[in-house]
Image (cartoon, rainbow, N blue to C red):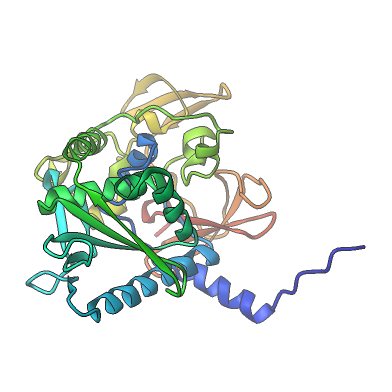
Length: 367
C-alpha cells in the first residue's frame, strides 16, 4: 500500500520561513563555558574565530524558544516551593556571570539555591535544562549513581557545571531537567571537581590564544563531523568568512582586546565584523599550501592543484553568481547574490533549488 502523503500547510510553511529568515544575526564574542566541554577543540576554535555564521532551521529555532520558556517556568515553580530559596539574578539584578582571560572566556549560570530537602544547609549552583531526552538522565543515575549521572548523561553540561561551581566557589550543583512544556522533570546533584575545572580552563586558554587550528577529531564521514556546523570549512574546503578574527594580522590580547597588528589599533566589535580590504586569511583557514608571497598577496596551491591568490576580499554586486560551499539541499556550488536584510549587506540563494545560503560581509559587496 502506498504511503500516505504528509500534509503540508502552506501558511505554516510560510510562518516557518519567516522565522528562519528573521533569526537574529548574532555571534558570541567569547568562548562559552556552556560549550567548552565539546569534544572537538577545532570546532570551538572555528566558533571563537567567527569562521562561519551558523543559521538554524525552523524546528531548531522553535526548540530554542521552548527551552527558554520552559526554564523560566521551572525557575518560577522552584521559587514557589516552601523552604527553598532561589536566586536567579545577582544583587544588581543581572544574571550571574563569570569571565576569565580578559573576558574571552565567559558563562552565565541560571542561579543558586538553598534549602533542598536532601541537603537543606548547602548552597548549590542551580541550572535548568529542557530536553526531550530528560528520561536518559534518570537512566544515567541508575547506572552510575546520582553524583556521576550528569557526566554520564552529557559531558558538555557536566563541564559547564564544574566550571560554574569553581568560579562561584560552591561545592554542589543542582541540575533540574524538564521535558518540553515542563510537564515532567527530574534532577541530580553533582559534586565539585576542581581538577576537571582546571583542565577545562587550560583547554579554553589553548583555544583562545591559538593562531593555528587544533587537530581534527575525525574524518568527513565520522559521526561527530557529519553533524558539525563547520564541516564545510573543516573537510570540504569551503572558504571562511572574512572578518578580523579570521585575519592573520589580528592579535588576541590577554586583557580581552582584539588588536590589528597591521594598522596598530584596537578593534571594536563592529570593526571585527566588518573586516577591511587588507584582510588575509589565517593559513589554516585556506584549504591549500602556501607557495609564495608577492606584493602583500599570498599565493596558495589548493587541494585540487589550482592556484589561488589571497589578495583581500572580492567584491560582488546584486545578481552576481558566485561559487561557494556546496548547497546542503541539492549539492550545487553556485549561488546568486541577493539583497540582504537587517545588518546583512547581501544574501545568497542557491541557483538550483533557491535554498538560503547565508550572508555576505559588507567588505564583499559593492557599496
